[in-house]
Image (tube, rainbow, N blue to C red; front, top):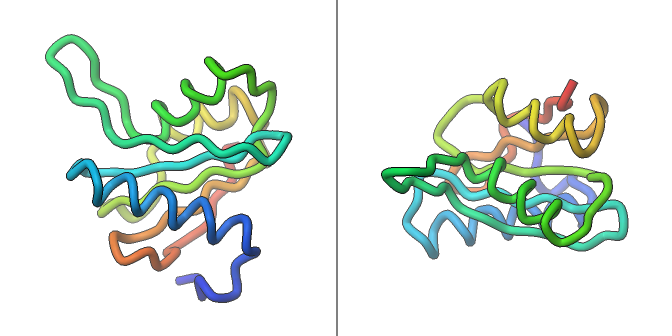
Length: 117
């Protein structure tokens, strides 16, 4: 477990944004990513009959659609213990293998930080 108070303020911000998206939308996961310019993109799980995306996939898609060319960091708030392989892959596609992915529980406590690699 990672002490959330020890996080960089910008990392704490994306965890807070991810947690807010999850709570506000009543979805299983919330996510936020920070691009190379410091802009943030926030999303929740998308669960339509014809389209299913995790929160992290949706946040990365929003970043790409807005013109981001790289990522500095990503965060996901979830009940899961770690980020899925698919979530890490989408972060890796835009940010590279070394991009950190902060995985937090619903209370915002960061459980682990993994790389997209």
